[in-house]
Image (cartoon, rainbow, N blue to C red; front, side, top):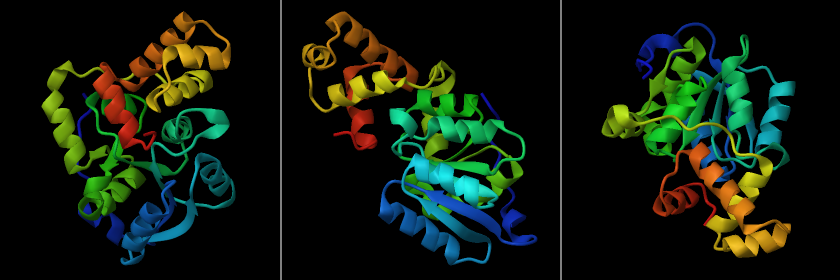
Length: 227
């Protein structure tokens, strides 16, 4: 497992304020995060985005040092969330640092994010206490997990394996419909596919998201606002 170090608290006190883009599909979260940053002289909010397309546009038009983004915003071309874009930022030299801001706190998803280089993660319950440290860590490319995220990984121990990828567009569509109450048979009729194919797509999505049981699926769907 990756070593987790707390970013130096004085990292935001040196030089100019860090330029930050805040992205979340809930306006109240964007407002709260932006207000917290604006209440200090450590960071300057230079842009906001409500979905992955808006975030991509902001990144094309606005220079910034750090992106603070929700994991489960509507994605590009129907894909799951903003994971692909954030992962690309984390793995590309010279791009802004990334702070993942999320309520998704299952151990497989957390380790999967870290496996893909998204190793600065703040549980939304920890924003008030840990966000500024996370911003400093992201700018320095230093791993950082907020309190709830660290506790989640600690409770899982060494038995936790990372999630294995990003659901395809069709897999995510099937997962959404199933989470919202449609049966495998009904989804199969809707897409004119066999029940076996739909079941396989559902199981593939669960595996990629690190979900094992139907209860895991239900809890995850509630966390990300599908139900």
